[in-house]
Length: 183
Image (cartoon, rainbow, N blue to C red; front, side, top):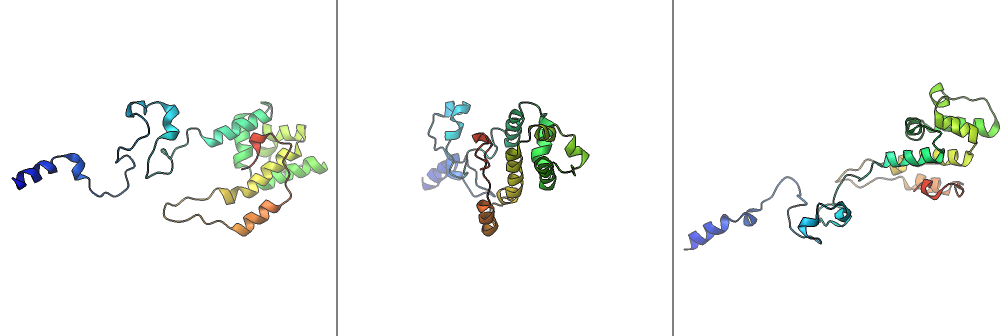
Protein backbone atom coordinates (compact mmCIF):
# COMPACT_ATOMS: atom_id res chain seq x y z
CA UNK A 1 0.00 0.00 0.00
CA UNK A 2 2.84 2.42 0.90
CA UNK A 3 4.60 1.64 -2.36
CA UNK A 4 1.40 2.26 -4.32
CA UNK A 5 0.74 5.67 -2.64
CA UNK A 6 4.36 6.73 -3.14
CA UNK A 7 4.18 5.76 -6.81
CA UNK A 8 0.94 7.68 -7.19
CA UNK A 9 2.48 10.85 -5.67
CA UNK A 10 5.48 10.61 -8.00
CA UNK A 11 3.15 10.81 -11.00
CA UNK A 12 1.87 14.27 -9.98
CA UNK A 13 4.11 16.85 -11.76
CA UNK A 14 4.04 19.45 -8.96
CA UNK A 15 5.96 17.05 -6.75
CA UNK A 16 8.77 16.52 -9.25
CA UNK A 17 10.15 20.07 -9.33
CA UNK A 18 13.91 19.79 -9.25
CA UNK A 19 16.95 21.98 -9.46
CA UNK A 20 18.06 23.54 -12.72
CA UNK A 21 20.81 25.66 -14.13
CA UNK A 22 18.91 28.93 -13.62
CA UNK A 23 16.00 30.42 -11.71
CA UNK A 24 12.76 30.20 -13.66
CA UNK A 25 10.64 33.25 -12.68
CA UNK A 26 7.50 31.55 -13.99
CA UNK A 27 7.97 28.43 -11.85
CA UNK A 28 5.27 29.38 -9.37
CA UNK A 29 1.68 30.45 -9.59
CA UNK A 30 1.47 33.57 -7.41
CA UNK A 31 -0.42 36.33 -9.20
CA UNK A 32 -2.14 39.59 -8.36
CA UNK A 33 -4.39 39.34 -11.43
CA UNK A 34 -6.57 36.75 -13.06
CA UNK A 35 -4.49 34.53 -15.33
CA UNK A 36 -6.76 35.30 -18.26
CA UNK A 37 -6.12 39.06 -18.04
CA UNK A 38 -2.35 38.53 -18.47
CA UNK A 39 -2.56 39.22 -22.17
CA UNK A 40 -3.71 42.78 -21.48
CA UNK A 41 -0.64 44.98 -21.81
CA UNK A 42 -1.87 47.66 -19.39
CA UNK A 43 -1.45 45.21 -16.47
CA UNK A 44 2.09 44.26 -17.43
CA UNK A 45 3.84 46.69 -15.02
CA UNK A 46 1.96 45.03 -12.15
CA UNK A 47 2.80 41.43 -12.96
CA UNK A 48 4.52 39.83 -10.03
CA UNK A 49 7.64 37.77 -10.25
CA UNK A 50 9.92 37.11 -7.34
CA UNK A 51 13.03 36.18 -9.31
CA UNK A 52 13.26 39.30 -11.50
CA UNK A 53 13.41 42.97 -10.59
CA UNK A 54 10.94 43.78 -13.34
CA UNK A 55 8.67 41.34 -15.11
CA UNK A 56 10.47 41.88 -18.40
CA UNK A 57 14.10 42.71 -18.97
CA UNK A 58 13.24 44.51 -22.21
CA UNK A 59 12.10 48.11 -22.26
CA UNK A 60 8.66 48.71 -23.81
CA UNK A 61 10.18 51.47 -25.95
CA UNK A 62 13.69 51.96 -27.18
CA UNK A 63 15.05 54.80 -24.99
CA UNK A 64 17.37 56.02 -27.77
CA UNK A 65 14.44 56.45 -30.17
CA UNK A 66 12.51 58.41 -27.56
CA UNK A 67 15.48 60.71 -26.86
CA UNK A 68 16.08 61.30 -30.57
CA UNK A 69 12.41 62.13 -31.15
CA UNK A 70 12.58 64.68 -28.32
CA UNK A 71 15.67 66.33 -29.80
CA UNK A 72 14.12 66.44 -33.28
CA UNK A 73 11.06 68.12 -31.72
CA UNK A 74 13.41 70.51 -29.88
CA UNK A 75 14.85 71.61 -33.23
CA UNK A 76 11.27 72.19 -34.47
CA UNK A 77 11.78 69.31 -36.93
CA UNK A 78 14.72 71.10 -38.59
CA UNK A 79 16.98 68.10 -37.93
CA UNK A 80 16.47 64.65 -39.38
CA UNK A 81 16.26 61.67 -37.03
CA UNK A 82 19.44 60.20 -38.48
CA UNK A 83 21.37 63.43 -37.98
CA UNK A 84 19.95 63.90 -34.48
CA UNK A 85 20.97 60.34 -33.61
CA UNK A 86 24.50 60.91 -34.88
CA UNK A 87 24.79 64.28 -33.13
CA UNK A 88 23.47 63.13 -29.75
CA UNK A 89 24.67 59.54 -29.63
CA UNK A 90 27.77 59.28 -31.81
CA UNK A 91 29.64 62.57 -32.07
CA UNK A 92 32.29 63.03 -29.40
CA UNK A 93 32.42 65.80 -26.83
CA UNK A 94 35.44 67.43 -28.47
CA UNK A 95 33.48 68.14 -31.67
CA UNK A 96 30.55 69.53 -29.68
CA UNK A 97 32.97 71.67 -27.69
CA UNK A 98 34.52 73.06 -30.89
CA UNK A 99 31.05 73.85 -32.21
CA UNK A 100 30.19 75.56 -28.91
CA UNK A 101 33.39 77.63 -29.05
CA UNK A 102 32.65 78.59 -32.66
CA UNK A 103 29.15 79.81 -31.76
CA UNK A 104 30.17 81.54 -28.53
CA UNK A 105 33.37 83.31 -29.67
CA UNK A 106 32.65 83.46 -33.41
CA UNK A 107 35.94 81.59 -33.85
CA UNK A 108 36.98 79.47 -36.80
CA UNK A 109 34.98 76.27 -37.13
CA UNK A 110 37.29 73.32 -36.41
CA UNK A 111 35.04 70.30 -36.79
CA UNK A 112 34.94 67.46 -39.32
CA UNK A 113 32.70 67.83 -42.36
CA UNK A 114 30.42 65.08 -41.08
CA UNK A 115 29.62 67.27 -38.05
CA UNK A 116 29.42 70.54 -39.99
CA UNK A 117 26.98 69.09 -42.55
CA UNK A 118 24.79 67.55 -39.84
CA UNK A 119 21.35 69.22 -39.78
CA UNK A 120 21.32 69.34 -35.98
CA UNK A 121 24.72 71.07 -35.92
CA UNK A 122 23.40 73.53 -38.48
CA UNK A 123 20.39 74.14 -36.25
CA UNK A 124 22.69 75.03 -33.35
CA UNK A 125 24.75 77.34 -35.57
CA UNK A 126 21.61 79.17 -36.70
CA UNK A 127 19.74 79.15 -33.39
CA UNK A 128 22.87 79.77 -31.26
CA UNK A 129 21.35 77.87 -28.35
CA UNK A 130 24.47 77.48 -26.23
CA UNK A 131 22.55 76.23 -23.25
CA UNK A 132 21.20 73.14 -25.02
CA UNK A 133 24.57 72.50 -26.64
CA UNK A 134 26.25 72.86 -23.24
CA UNK A 135 23.75 70.39 -21.83
CA UNK A 136 24.70 67.85 -24.50
CA UNK A 137 28.38 68.40 -23.71
CA UNK A 138 27.66 67.84 -20.01
CA UNK A 139 25.69 64.69 -20.84
CA UNK A 140 28.63 63.40 -22.90
CA UNK A 141 30.93 64.11 -19.95
CA UNK A 142 28.62 62.29 -17.53
CA UNK A 143 27.93 59.37 -19.87
CA UNK A 144 30.79 57.10 -18.70
CA UNK A 145 29.44 57.26 -15.14
CA UNK A 146 25.85 56.36 -15.94
CA UNK A 147 26.33 53.76 -18.68
CA UNK A 148 28.11 50.93 -16.94
CA UNK A 149 28.22 47.28 -17.89
CA UNK A 150 25.88 45.24 -15.73
CA UNK A 151 27.12 41.94 -14.41
CA UNK A 152 24.71 39.78 -12.45
CA UNK A 153 27.27 38.71 -9.85
CA UNK A 154 29.40 41.85 -9.69
CA UNK A 155 28.34 45.10 -8.03
CA UNK A 156 28.46 48.24 -10.14
CA UNK A 157 31.73 50.07 -9.66
CA UNK A 158 31.37 53.84 -9.78
CA UNK A 159 34.08 56.42 -9.26
CA UNK A 160 32.17 58.44 -6.69
CA UNK A 161 34.86 61.12 -6.41
CA UNK A 162 34.73 61.95 -10.12
CA UNK A 163 30.94 61.80 -10.11
CA UNK A 164 30.78 64.17 -7.15
CA UNK A 165 33.15 66.58 -8.89
CA UNK A 166 31.03 66.43 -12.03
CA UNK A 167 27.86 67.13 -10.05
CA UNK A 168 29.44 70.18 -8.45
CA UNK A 169 30.45 71.74 -11.77
CA UNK A 170 28.60 74.90 -12.55
CA UNK A 171 25.97 73.70 -15.02
CA UNK A 172 22.65 75.50 -15.09
CA UNK A 173 20.08 74.14 -17.53
CA UNK A 174 16.96 75.83 -16.20
CA UNK A 175 15.90 77.20 -19.61
CA UNK A 176 15.70 73.77 -21.22
CA UNK A 177 12.34 72.00 -21.38
CA UNK A 178 11.84 69.72 -18.38
CA UNK A 179 11.87 66.53 -20.50
CA UNK A 180 15.38 67.28 -21.77
CA UNK A 181 17.00 67.45 -18.32
CA UNK A 182 19.79 64.98 -17.78
CA UNK A 183 18.77 62.51 -15.10
